[in-house]
Image (cartoon, rainbow, N blue to C red):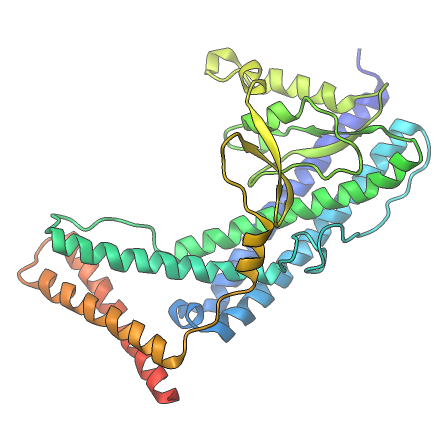
Amino acid sequence: MTSPIAAQSTIAIEAQATQVATQSTSAQQAATTYFLSQLGGNEEEVFYETDAITTLAQDTGRVVDAFSASAARTTDAFIADSIANLSGKRYRAIGLRKTVGIAGELGVRQGVTTAGVIGRAADTYRYQQSLLDKQFIADVAAGAPTPTELATPLSMAVERVRRGTQLNVALASRNQAVATMAGAADAGLIDGYRRVLHAELSHEGSCGLCVAASTAIYKAHHLMPLHPGCHCVPVPVTLKHDLAGMINARDLGRFYSDAGGTSAEKLRETRYKVDEHGEIGPVLRPHGDPIRTEQQARRDTNRPRAKTPEQALRTLRNKRDALARAYGQASRGQTDPAWRARLDGINQRLARIETQIVKLEARR
C-alpha cells in the first residue's frame, strides 16, 4: 500500500512535469508567434540581411529566455520540496543558477547564446530555398510531369525556432535541477536522482532511449542526459527511498501493452550511449549515431566571413539567370495546374531576387 507521503510526492512530481511541459509549449508558441510577427511577410529581406536577422534573433531570444527562467524556477522549487520530503529536513530552493557555459541569461548551452540558436533559422531558410531552386531546375530539365513538392523555407525556419525553444527550456530545467540537488548531495540528504518518464506528455510515449536510461541512478552533480523532445524529469532519490523508480514502473505498465505492439520490456533493451555534446552537455543517443562536437558548435558560432557585395551580386545574378532559363522552358505551353502554381511561385522568387540585386547595386 502506498504511503501518504509517497502518494503526495507522486502528485507533486506529476504536477511539476506537467507544469514544465506547459511552460515549454507556451514558450514554443510565444517564440514562433513573435518570430513570425516580426517578419511581417518580408522573410526574404530579413533572412538575407545580417543585421535584420541578428536583431530578430536577439529579440526572440529574450522571449525564450524568459520562459526558460520560469521553467528553471519551477524546477528549483520542486526539487527543493522533493529533497525536504525525502530527508524530513527543511531544504530551501536556491534560486536561478547558471550551470553550463558562459553564454546567455541562464547559460543553457556551451558557448552559444539563445540568440545564436534562434539565428540558425535563417540558415535553415536559405538552405531550404536553395533546395527549392535546385529542385525546380532539375524538374524542368527532367521534364517531370508534376513539380516535386518540398516544404516551404518559412515553415522549416519556424520549426527550427520551435525545436530550439523546446530544447532550451528543457536544458534550463535540467541544469537547474542539478544545481539545486548539489547542496543536498553534499549534505548527505540524497544519494542521487533518477529520470522519471512522462510518456503521457509525448504523442508516441517515452522513447526507448529514455526507458533504458531510466533504470540507472545518476550522481546528483551530473547533468541528466537529454535528447531533443525529451520530457523526462530528474527526481531525487535515496538508497532507501526510490519513489522515482516506483513511478516509472507504474507508468510503464499503465502506458504500454504488448497488445499494442510496444512492450516496456523491449524498450528497456534499447542500446544507448551517453555522449558529451559540444553544445548542450550529456545527451542520450543510439549506438552509431553522430554527435555534435564542441568544435562544430564553435564553428557555427563563429560564422564564416560574409560575402563581399561583388560576391553576393555574382551569386544572385547566376541564380536569377538559371531560374529564368528554367522558367522560360517550363512555361511554354504549360497548362498543368500544379506546374502553373509552381511557375507563379518562381516568378515571385525572380522578382525578389531582382529586388535584392537592385539594393546591392545601390550600395556599391
